[in-house]
Length: 409
Ligand code: GDD
Ligand code: MG
Image 1 (cartoon, protein in one colour):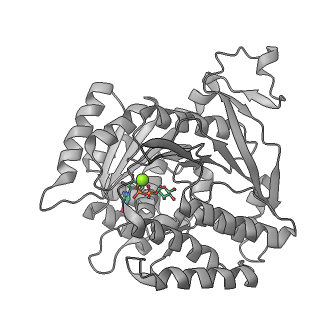
Image 2 (tube, helix red, strand yellow; image 1 turned 90 degrees about the vertical axis):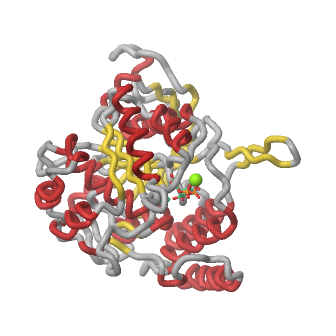
């Protein structure tokens, strides 16, 4: 991969947010170490495929699934390199038709043919709920039925624990409703290329889509940002600007569903529920390591810095768009909520967000449980991994989890 070195960076305490990086070549060919090409100080840096593979071999790719068509998910699996551990976390319906059983059969067959290391779990598996309970992380359980709560974030948190148990050193997420397997492969390569550029053990890569094609008047229009992303980015940038005193457009990935991070960072973040998880990454990092709040300063992490890379992918992002306006509004609401509710949100921005949230609620389009719907989960660093492992040991999905999670990542 040939990729631009970030030339613009905003710093908030220990958090470095790098400006968006363009990709110049998806494959910059094999590079011999020591040659002119492989030197790492160019403005545009070639990253050898070997360097990407080395990171990918230790990276788990998580595919959250909620009732997607199997053919679509199979395309996504096809785009994930064979050497990545793949974790499918499904919250698909089990009745009246057991869609999960159909998924399981199809994906197991797929993994048999490709010899892909695949972990497939259902979010509502009672043993996984028990594992969280035994591991001292009951916050993720629904008090009504004692099972793991629904939501994309909840599935991601579960998958993060599984990846940690499997010994993965990094974790990446790819939505399961992507129509282009080639785009999925590109995202994974950008994850490894981005992580390889970091000097810190605490690094994150977020994909900034180059374009999202839409059909407008019988032609294709390549939009740059969706409605939600536009507002989320604006508010996150406003937050940075209020602290720095300089207007900025640095954040372009406020809602990036496609992102990856080192396991060391994944274990230190707090998470928030549902679709608010991605904007909350920024908020939580600024809260904890931005130096804006006296609380919870982890000396070691502050010394190391936390690096956020934003890489502009080349493939158009084409996903299932049949999810409607209510869904978009609920996502925008969740993003605004986590910014608004943060103790580091400056008063002026909070007022603006409160107005916008009221307007959205007034439109009566936000479905779900209303204003209290966003939940927060503590970091996974306190979880008893061995208790979790012992609880699920007999389950068929535990095959790839028999490493020793007590090893530092
Ligand atoms: N395991 C699990 N559990 N997966 C879920 C759940 C759940 O409760 N709900 C949704 N998913 C899966 C979907 O099947 C899909 O693969 C992925 O999570 C994203 O859900 P979508 O419903 O397709 O979201 P979207 O396309 O509107 O939004 C995506 O892009 C946004 C950026 O534009 C998401 O990734 C957002 O998180 C992201 O902010
Ligand atoms: Mg989608």
